[in-house]
Image 1 (cartoon, rainbow, N blue to C red):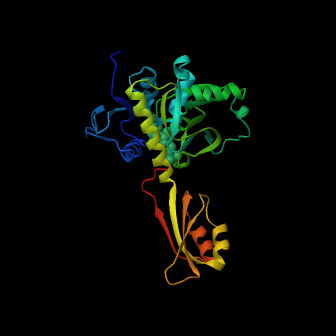
Image 2 (image 1 turned 45 degrees about the vertical axis):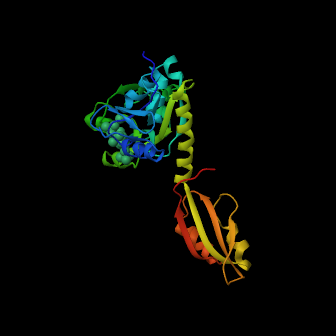
Image 3 (image 1 turned 60 degrees about the horizontal axis):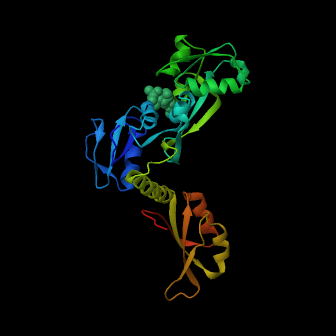
Length: 297
Ligand code: PRP
Ligand code: ZN
């Protein structure tokens, strides 16, 4: 294969991960020439291009060296690792990205009796994840037949082509609509940045390291909130005890009010109304929760 000097990232062409993945890359300072209906998007500014493909093809493209990195669901990555043998072992999760959360679960018709995985013995299980399901069945010593379907797995029991299913569940709406009941979770999944265990040793490797640092900043910021409030010195301890986790808060004097302090705290994660109300009860007032846009430690 011809050596490349530009980094190439594979991502889902159209689907649940597409928009959030593009937004994440944009936040990392990457922008691409608009050609969303095409396979290839040229990166402007940084030497990073995009390949828009079917999500199931992403691990293979990385394993073959056609792409350096991929944004893909852990479910797809692990399924590939499970069935690709040595080729799959070379792939790893460089970062989990915090979106596209779902789980791979077994679900049975709502009126079917079910107590343990062994109840699946002798049944037909429809799935698009034969590798992950097969491994789970072996772990649980269940002898069932796996029926591999590319899609529409959830209607297999109704059509009589399978007895139960093993499919992705996000809201659970699909299961409810098909009178199915979730029984076992095989895998908790979310979008991940996948790549080879060892990064390229040329400029592309440097670019990956830069990208990882920016990603860490973006992910940290996305989950951070700046909490601002006023409190009197007498209620300071009570207020501080209720603050969500994070580094030590900063205290500032309030002009003309020697008893008052302005408190500024960086919180890791969302601050709920309930938490705010508790903090207010402890003596805080003038409270603000602000999103953090950029952070460089
Ligand atoms: C997945 C999965 C279920 C549905 C679950 O399909 O196969 O059908 O999402 O989501 P829910 O719990 O929120 O209802 P997807 O929409 O990704 O399409 P696909 O099955 O064609 O890949
Ligand atoms: Zn899919």
